[in-house]
Length: 516
Image (cartoon, rainbow, N blue to C red; front, side, top):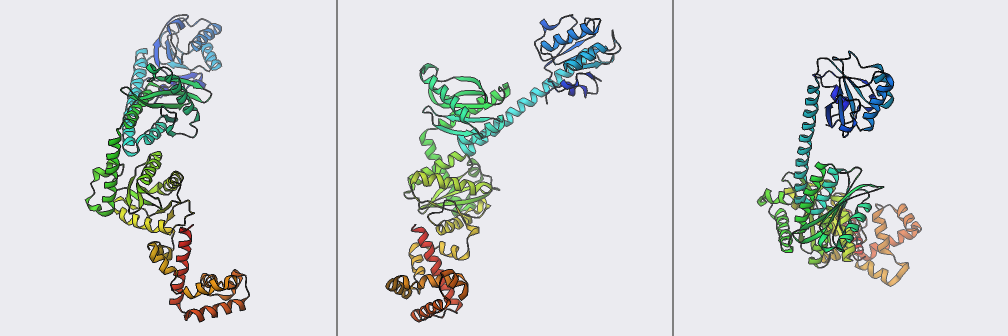
């Protein structure tokens, strides 16, 4: 908490009273300094609480106004006036000047020596510095945890939140590796400008630079280890960074340098370990080591949901693209292939939005109609249930779907059919309907028996609403239904027949969706 004039008046041991210039009561005091000179300004640097017994303030209101105006011009914060030595109260001229200039004037009681005020200010400043150091330590720990949980994107997000600013990381080729904030364009532009400038002077490629424009203040810092340059980190804030925040920025640069400097073999080994942990979670959760879960950013008590991406094509490029899409998110995750699909374990509270973005990016990069299913939220140790649900949901999705199909939003028939392999699905789709298919093929537009059956089942066997939906006369509908009974030898009023044919109709819809 900063030491303000107002706060100083709340310290009971001092007994200070604000008698003028209340508009400036929230000014921050950087030091307390007693001085008895007609013009003390040459010995002041700004930010001081000036303390005086009134020895040289002037004898009249004009002189006192000039004295206080000098303190204002020197950047002082307030005046503490002793009322126990030469004066028993603050002179009216000084009060009037304080109010006119908006410059706080404090009345100091006879019982309070100036040294007590100085000590109080020093104590408050020291406590403020301790709090600032503790804040940096806490934020450093948060940055370290972010590195473990989500790599560079997570560090950038944590740094942006800690500094209440925008952050961007660009590599030497000007590609944006990670960013945080509503508008990072200026930060990216400054980082690229510094990168371009440094590239013309190879000996100065590792540097830091502070800039300012209409958007605020920007600090650009090179990200390097030994002789290897990995890029530039740019931070934009409304005000220049104070020393504590510059220290936090340096810590973030170190963490990002380490992360970007990971050898490819280390990253490959880490990905293999991630896949092993994921498969263990699915197949034998009772054997899962809590330390391994924490390494990848999960606690054993966390709630997760599993997303499954299907129709991804060859697994190696698919896994690379899924990994790249997740790296942009900067969140804890586990991934592994499940048969020909890719499964991703995500924090449950953001699973749907993240799965949507990952599906979109992977579709774009692979150029394939990737479908996605999302299982129900559950304990991380129960992820095997969620992955089976996600598989069912993914298989129930249509090719055109650009959002994950959520298991809990599927109907019973969709779940049952979504769990079938393609051969079984084709068998169900043609179960008992072969005669109708043959009839429709022979009679073309005048047939439409399969379409009629589907509409009849959709409308719960209600002839009137079915006829309206098909745009035909009810007598035409009755003729078609009679023909269906004649060709199949099945009773349309039987619940067993309706269920079997409804499954066949839904299976056809699902196959149509998969075939595009």
